[in-house]
Length: 214
Image 1 (cartoon, rainbow, N blue to C red):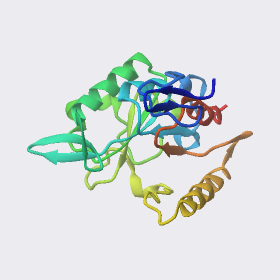
Image 2 (tube, rainbow, N blue to C red):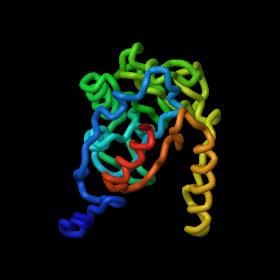
Image 3 (spheres, rainbow, N blue to C red):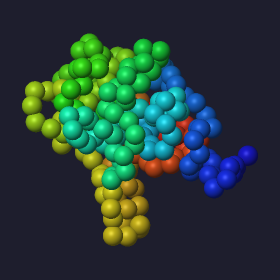
Image 4 (tube, one colour):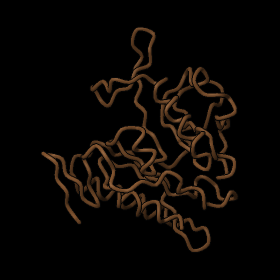
């Protein structure tokens, strides 16, 4: 236990750049009371495993980067094409939510034709924050584009997005300050940290983040 290597890939409790997470948590939201606001739920996000493995590992925020090309919405990460279309992502997530209806998924994406792939009833189509009960088996869009309400307005949230800091220490200070501020809100004896976004987290780190909900 501790460190596992396969070729050049490394799997530790805190870092994992392998293709398969060590621990799966496909239905961890089941025991969260319906009355809790979704903003009081601490949830992990990552950019590493395949979408199917991310969902089964317990990832509930999906940072989808979309580029419009020749009439298609294709998935990119930076300048790198991910060999997937937005419709493929939506179909995978819908299939997951139907298998695990206790869960919800939040999208950070510019979405224009989401209703072509997702039944209207599976969308949280309001700018108001839903309760956990209202969000179950639904896609919740963080809307960063103009038009009718299709989800929660991205700029209405308290966000730390210092993704390209001049110094690593500056990044850590930004993250630490933001998490400390988020933890001021309590539900009973729990602290909440909101969405914790990471690259290549280990499955045990993901599990630790999920554990703040209990």
